[in-house]
Length: 217
Length: 269
Image (cartoon, rainbow over all chains, first blue to last red; front, side):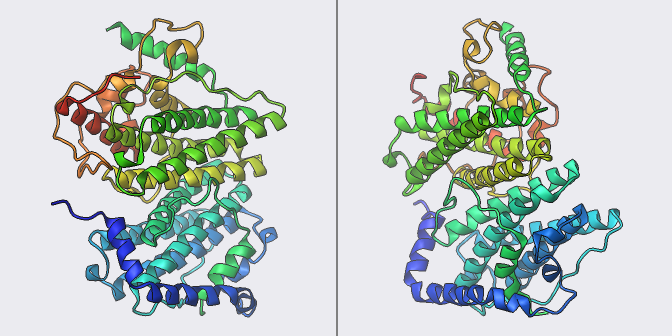
């Protein structure tokens, strides 16, 4: 007897709890819609706020700190979430994959921090976040998919501002992994793993509108 | 084995046509790979149907095929706009990759992971071309999504490493060249009528049976990859099988071994 395929079981789970899922997505949508306004209220000292405009990404260090700001957010999201949830909250294997993603984001934070320090820059630090998923694993997965997709778009949008070829190659190696994550998380959320033939590059101000609302201080 | 020396010549001839020193050259390098991927899905799916796979898989593969067609069209248009001459599709021999749905999926996995590494490695050549670089990155991400999905289908890790490894044109072409029909890919060289090493190299060993459909190999073999991809000789870098690609290539090998064990191979088209 073959175990049912993961996607099938997950689709059933999502169908069963569709209302929960919709609520989770709705929370995210509301937050997203208010993102622009909220972002404008940020006090100084927060990395995302500093890079509200593409024109401000004048140096490789600026680009790396912009990337690090997003990697901090992702790393904290998975680290905190996987302390709230355990393996029983997901189908078999999912928790382990989420833990692998968590470890990847932590590795990205470490690599970017190290690179910035090696260039005599000051790496941005982790902020306080509110991701709004509560105790709902499906809401957590929905936010995860949104974050990964945004991460891909963010890297694709600012790769052009890098001037060091080695940094560009490293960023390319990171964004590929974000896209791999996005593919997986889309599928977990019952969506196409690759909804378009091309990614959508986003400018820093567009990324800020999406990610900003998750940052509380 | 005279085939090995001939493969070396073919690889050298293919590499001689890769020029990443100009934007058009970089885009043509990408287009060469997109043509290969596009032809693989187009021709492979023509001989397969939804019932060959688990639910939903065929539709996803068809979506990938459409993406590759879009990539080919976009790169071709861009090269023309830049005043360059886009490379055209050549003749491919996918050999045993088309013998069975499992072999098809395993080869798809290897191709997609190679594509990701190729774009990761080549982005630096477009560093002075902001718009072209951004466009290339938007393709790169989609190839990574494909690779992630195909890794899953083949029972591997969707994201085996925290950072994807870049591949050089030499590494990429060492993997791609065995799919090129010799006379087509490298006119005037190696025209021996030699068939694809990629399909033929791995079909002899025995392995465990497969459940077909979406392949779910639980482990990738640690041996054999080097043999399969190094059969072309010293032109292939030593470190290659150790990259993230290794799992994909190993899965491809494993699938072909299963085919051999089942003894239900169809003749190559």
